[in-house]
Length: 342
Image 1 (tube, rainbow, N blue to C red):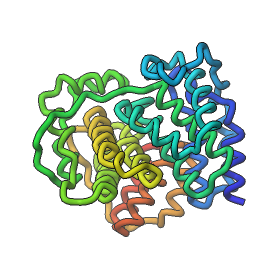
Image 2 (cartoon, rainbow, N blue to C red):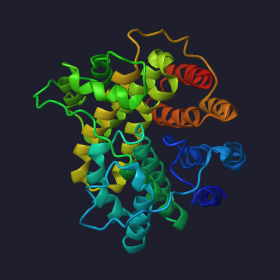
Image 3 (cartoon, one colour):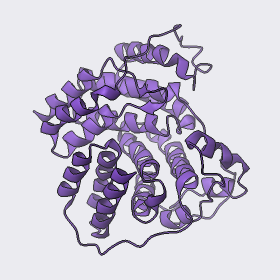
Image 4 (cartoon, rainbow, N blue to C red):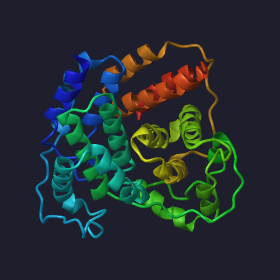
């Protein structure tokens, strides 16, 4: 039943666009996958009903993107309809894993696309496909890839090192903050290129001695904990410091191992960039670790109706499954409250 609910949700939004109001992301596919994953499938259609006034029609194409001219339209949201059409064709002609492997290295340098929602949407779709390969899930992967391509946005490049390996929490503490935090994410990310400490911070991918999945999981876990102590400054936007690398981590099993190392580097750069853009100067201590279990916290996130709260608890649940750290329960409660109040 839960598989059919997710496929039904994907079908409901199949002909909607990836954005609304010009730049805000369509969160239905991501939130629906997270809710089904955590046993709230019966609430999915009701949640979509409440969200439906924020959906817009799928944009129409302007001009066909051919196999040899895909570079020019990268990052051009006016061509969103053309990108959607392209990935419909790609996935009709080749297995989804082949399409993903072909496009992942092309899109990865632009991981900041849509405030990282491009890669996040792809990560949710891949996790669903790894559970069961269905037509709606393949189509959803195409929509996520198309959104990523249309909003493709690179981050200021890292330095060349060598930089010392460190743990993920220390690495996040070392990320410099952008000086002007008055405006949106594109303005903030543009300032990274002028930060003297950015090249070293972006290149110092944590956990040099471990394998890629372990290193990437440590980045996710550190960003989750940091949201509890630093999320008050930008509760919604700082969610992406954790959910973006987690989307990459979820995608690794579907990718050739040769793509794992560049995926780790890009995921770390995304986490560091969001941290630089939105983190405050100081931390707030967490309350005692006691609290409700994660099932109850996810129910609270669902009650808020906020997709970012749902997606953050989804990612935090992965971190909790790895560590069992009870402090994460306090992070979960505080983060849902902060996101709901933002």
